[in-house]
Image (cartoon, rainbow, N blue to C red; front, top):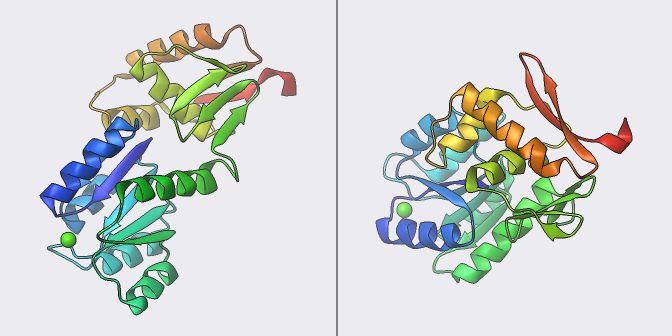
Amino acid sequence: MNILLIEDDDVLADGLTHTLSDSGYCVTVAKTGTYAEHLLKAEGFDLIVLDLGLPDMDGLQLLRKLRSQKLSLPIMILTARDDLNDRIEGISQGADDYMTKPFELRELEARLHALIRRCYGGFSHIIEVGSLQLDTSSQKILAKGELLSLSAREYAVLELLLMQNGKVISKDKFAQHLSLQGDALTDNAIEVYIHRIRKHIAPYDVGIRTFRGLGYLLENKLND
Ligand code: CA
């Protein structure tokens, strides 16, 4: 799960990165709104945490701009402003949740989990395709209830397939998802990971279908 943290306070950004990384999230920090916009030109993020007091622009202004560009990612506002008007403004401009500094990290994490659950898993923190389950709280993938033993990159590839369940995912999208985790992958490398994941999931009722020139789709074989 890739989080874009838009926050100019170094201490807070480092602390949050540390905590969220420990929980299995991949965090990219943008210290300005302009840099965040630049990063968002590439796809691959699953969630945005947005500070309102940014050095180059107001966070609410950035929020408005992103929503007007039809960016649909879930956005959690994090701010020192506790003015009720700001909160209402944030939510009405398209933020999904709002936390006021200072906050407890545990509460922030719990709310991020809830946000991910609402946006990606319906009402559950489990995203299910056939007998595969992605637990978005613990960042684990289970097959028939057993933990699937995957390398970090294999996990990232299968996580994306599960999160975008029902959609064909292009190699570019895989490359962007993985590049946020520090890996620059070629098309060939992605084919290798898809091949390895196919082996991991071969005993189960799910498969990865190739759409030539378009990408890959995770599907429940029983639905054929
Ligand atoms: Ca700030």
